[in-house]
Structure formats: C-alpha cells, structure tokens
Length: 195
Image 1 (spheres, helix red, strand yellow):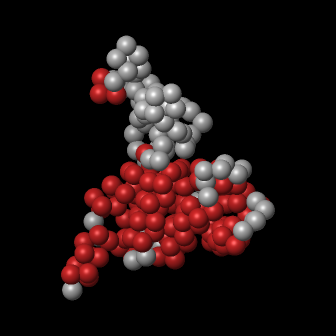
Image 2 (cartoon, rainbow, N blue to C red; image 1 turned 135 degrees about the vertical axis):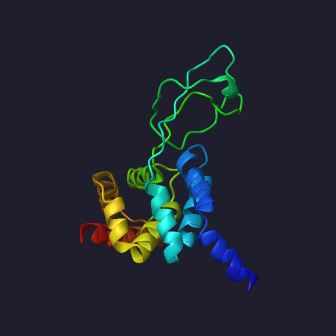
C-alpha cells in the first residue's frame, strides 16, 4: 500500500521529474550524477504518466545561462548575467591546482536530450570517462520512452544530432559484452527513429 502510494506520487510529480532532469542537464562536472539521473528518469518512464513527464522534461528548452566574469572576486555569488560562454563540453574536472571547482562560465545544455546526445557522441569517439554502462543507460531511457510514448517520442527526439550519435555508436567496434549490448540497443532506437 505504501509502496503504491510512493510510486504514484513519484510518477505523477512534475517537480520530482524536473529536479532529476536538472541534475542531468546541469551536472556536466559529475558524470556519475548524470548517470544516476538517467537511471532515475528511466525508472520513472516505465509508466505512462512518468514517461509523459520525462519526455516533456528532457526535451524542454531552458533559458540560456550566462555569467559576467568578475575576476576580481572570483566568487560565484557575485557574478551577474551577461554573455554565454562555450567550452568543449562535459565532463570537465575541477581545477586540479587547488582542487576547487573552476568558476569559469561553462556552456550549459539547453535540453537534457543534448546531454544524452553528447554521452553517445563521446562514447562513439572513445572518450575514456564515458563507459558502455552509462551509454547503455541512455539507450535504456530512449527505449523506455519509445515503448511508452512511441509517437510523441519519435516527434520530440527526432533530430539529426541524435541520429548521427546513435549511428556512430553502432559503427564503434564493440570490445566487450556490455559494448555489444549498447550497440544492439542503439540499433533498436535508430530503427524506431527512422520508422
């Protein structure tokens, strides 16, 4: 009884889905948080209500984040909005000199779907921090969304960057059983996108 109430609360709570989605979208420095958010969204997307909220959250565009660089204080609290700065993306490590987080403005993806696409692309080009298990979780989320929200998922997720990233994952040489599973999952998602 309590388990069913908790499940109903989570799968129909837009606030919960939005919080997890923000962890995915803005967690560039911490790939483990991105992975945990993907797993949580996958679990939520196994029900119709949860899939609907998850699909909406990961494809929703957010405002362009920006900061004015106040180098005199180097305090994140005193930075003021002004311009958007881009870097080569995630995952970026904390500043190794003093083990503190680098406060230089970073590009923050406008959607969580961008982060998922970046995970697939980085895996395909063999970025070492992106493991097959993490990419497998991205693919599991995509598969779950297609299973529960087929027509809506195809429309919402149909973009060339995602297709190209999935194609690159399929082309990558699989050197382990988990990499084989990732490749097979990517092929299934591509088939659904192209159907």
